[in-house]
Image (cartoon, rainbow over all chains, first blue to last red; front, side):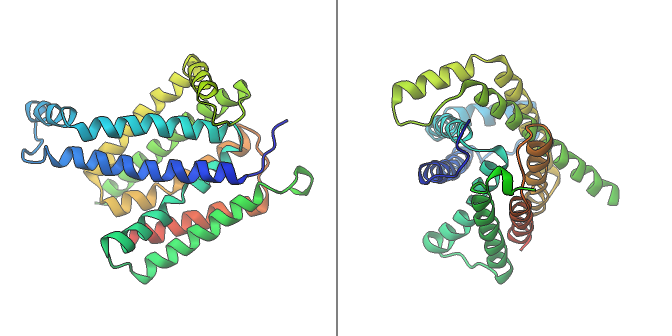
Length: 138
Length: 127
């Protein structure tokens, strides 16, 4: 029988996979920026677009990180319930606004902070729920 | 106009559903391997190799590919804000699938936490 508790190690793995996932979006976006001169309207322009994207080093770095995220996520799932791992991975909804404020000096509305608070509260509750013993769960 | 919105919502539900199926296949494949997380690189590679040699995992990947394709269609039709907030239904699908397919024990706290996350994502994405 597995221990289902979210340990510190699991939490670190989850945060690492979240940060790497954010990096994937960043690199994918970067790779399309170098191809954004032409509009994709038909098959020929789509082919040109894909050629530029695939010759960009950013895309391959992104794909490499995708593989790393898959391995880390698999390690997480080997230890905890899917219904715990997926909600905790929503941590990126806290991470991205945080990074946007600190590094990009973006303005965050009150509604968005409220949303971040709800997500945070939800993540904490779900994490705690993994410590409940089967007998206590009705 | 109304019909277009319904169409987009259905497409978002479809991508969430396909992604949920992918996670179900992944989770059940991993459970069949009984792996213990470690930082030993050799053991990790052995685990990944065992994992990718299971056909069930590739079935999951196929659903993931459908999910990605449908998501690209959604992004071409809808606002990114709206798409992301509606995609939070993904968390509800995952919770239901975990409870009824994987038979995970879902306590009140876990349901409440999942619900809060869904509400939070709608706020974050729409504002």
